[in-house]
Length: 184
Image (cartoon, rainbow, N blue to C red; front, side, top):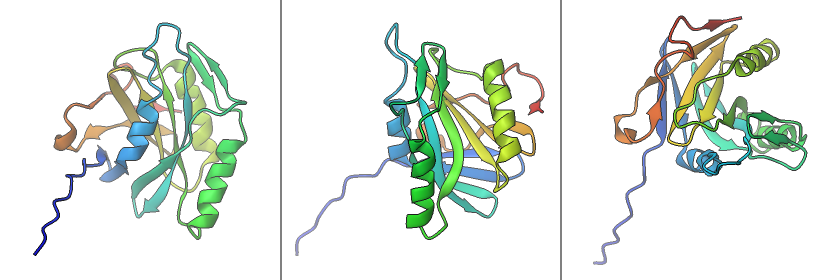
């Protein structure tokens, strides 16, 4: 008898939010966004969309887009302008027979442990006004950690870290100012 030993698969990132909502971010998505962390002195911000499925009140994120040629990238700003992001979401919707869709946004900040800027909060407020399918995950990638918030009905709820297996990933557990969640 031949025994094959499989390499241990790194667990996916699991985020928990108030109102009993879990968000699972698959490892290859975390790897893809982390590859764009602004580690260089003059590195420009990067970003894209998150694609996944709504499963009741939970979200499973299985894909993301990365910066594309028409996007505007500066040291302290990312503007998702390339229509390729929208095409990627539509293609995922079609290929998945209408189960995978746009579920959020990600971008980088040139800081170790990021938090949302005023521009981020205004942009997210606009996203929530136009996205009616379900909650939206907002992810900010820093050099050493991440900030994650779940947008729903004009409010961005901060994460409560649910996956003890990934303790090396630091997720902010408070709102940008340390006060109540953002309300539009």
